[in-house]
Length: 489
Ligand code: AMP
Image: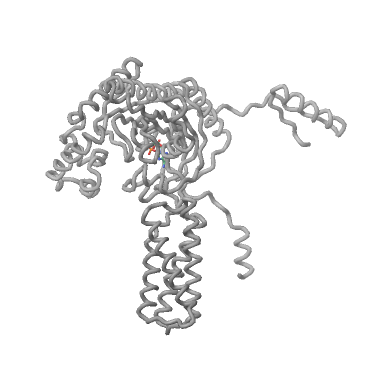
């Protein structure tokens, strides 16, 4: 490196990574105010705070958020775990070595070294398997067993004095090992969390919370990560205030009286919505609008989706490229479209409210009744479909003023069955996520200022002799709860 380049390197300025930003005082005072209000309001509804890790196994999000969603298919920050990197390297090396050995004459030393290398690989994979780091599936177990047994038989063969084998045997062994190694599904990827619901469910299961009095009410505040195109109100590291209510189902309850259960669920949904609206009210958030919808359940939604798909096929030529693609992949998402030219067409499409099954219709009616009882005003929006796979029945979104096109400050919904999908007991769930960055933006747009940094006392000490007394005075005053500035000179 030339001296010039080295100097330039020294002077290089570091910048926050694209889509991330620093939150500075005095603005952070507003963040603290928002978070303190969340702690107070949520506690008054019986919610307890849960703090979660920022990284989780990638598989958790693939399974819950869904592999076809934008979040999982292209927006997660994903890394391999240590053991995954080692296994990948060893597996690649195994394949390269096997290819080289195919072109060499049969040499005992080369065979021994390949066998011992394969042993190392399978030992590492085997211990990761028994620790549950790589998926403990029957296929993985079978691949590992087969590799072990092939190594064992070749070790015996090579050790024999009158060792003999044909080229064909050896080639077969090499290609079997590579094939079996490649068949192993290694997993071992971890991701920065793109949302919190999946982690809350994972924690619910892992900490046996189904044994607590039900339902369990939890909330959490923290950063989420999505590799989205940054713009106002959209960041790659953003903050969410997230609340969830989970209730493991008593198997006898559903059968006993389904209307009672549906009404109870509706009351829980409405209370959660009431809580977030109360929170926004306390913060004096302006221009708040609550949109609600029911997106049905596994009984009625698939039938509606098929109907929608068939209707969309009929108007396909008049739709944009994105919507045309979504007819196949996810027709519900077409309803989300903001494209001007598509609005008239979408308005004429069949509406899910007319195609809900009896239980979903009953539940949706009860939610609206419950919201009325709580004096929560809402706007029914049949086009509100949420992007994540796990929602069913109630979905809702809250928008606020001053946010331009990114005006959703909160999204939520019901997700019965998600805990079970993640390996837990049959459990009902409802929750929401507030985008804290957008909430703060909206508050700022409407002129909400952070509390000014308080300064109660300024000690203007003069002369060396007064300094010691000034330090003591500052300490005493601070202990009494005052904010004190003591200039160093
Ligand atoms: P979602 O988890 O996608 O339902 O989002 C819930 C809320 O989080 C949204 O309504 C937004 O307020 C906020 N949000 C989602 N993605 C971002 C982002 N990239 N930047 C800032 N806020 C976001």
